[in-house]
Image 1: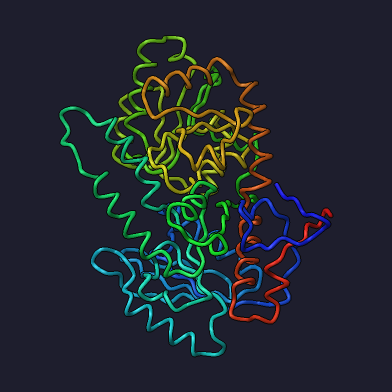
Image 2: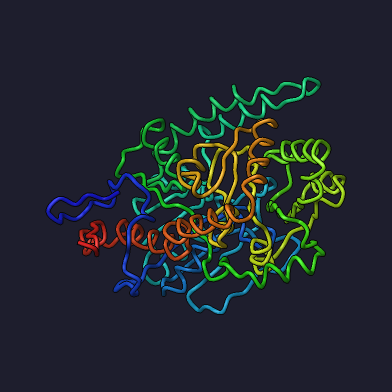
Length: 444
């Protein structure tokens, strides 16, 4: 992964691989940063998507490291805003636009007020287009984290068209998507630095969007390793609580939004066929489903082989992962890096997912970790049968390998350390840039 000729340090800004592969010091930095974050919505309880969960995990970790965080986000309409026992964490709330986005004029005024109060911001960070490019173009100390870009979504559009029922109206998503890609190629350069959450997205930003390599950095998503970890006792208690019989020799698990683009029509049809055609599979298998959405009721129609649990808090999710034998992510979305896969891996579980580049390039990189399938019913069924035939012992071995990869790359600690180093490197303070922008392996 890293070759350092004659112990020469690496220029981090040009490092082509994920920064998660590097080992940064765990000691607190000698310099504390004043950081501004723009994020459309701050997560509330279990109601959070991947972008919001990333914002929460990363910036709470940075605050715990001593940095001063100012978060510019929308105020919730029907719930109270969460409170945190940190004196260096500040929220600047504003009413969302009719479409649910940050009102750029209001948040920019809030930002300018805080930027002129005390010292100026060392770093400006935006989760996707929380801060629009029209405001960002003159900020050299800005980094944007992309959780999905239009070019990746073309693969999703192709899959959706192939799976479209003949009686469904054909969409023109692909044509519209090409236009969106061209728009992004034009305005992305207005952001100073770009963070890709998968190796595949980093490659696209460099090759297709033609952003100079020293402005593109790959930092894989991370999840809290103190919450998501193996705990067989919790798993057994969870199964007992929800009445999962010990005779079930295979417990499949799914989590997240139960909607079409997460692949649930595909998974529903595969399970329906397998439960009808194979009595032994029907007797021995149960599927635990954490989340909500329109496909929850459809899964309930499959009878006692499925158990729809609704949305779960993080602590409940940790027990859920420990209760299953393998985690299945049938997503049709080719963009981003799904947190549920990473949570399952850190919990010591084998994983199974759709064969899209962000997942096969960064997560399920070999059969030692798990299984991948094409987004077609036949391929999904064949893979589920292979999982069933491999059995619990093989899945446990894959789960151990899965956890090892998770600990190496996908912990919140790894992610926060990489972002902290990037922020120190590109901050407004040039006095120590050479120190922070170069990496010397501790193993040399």
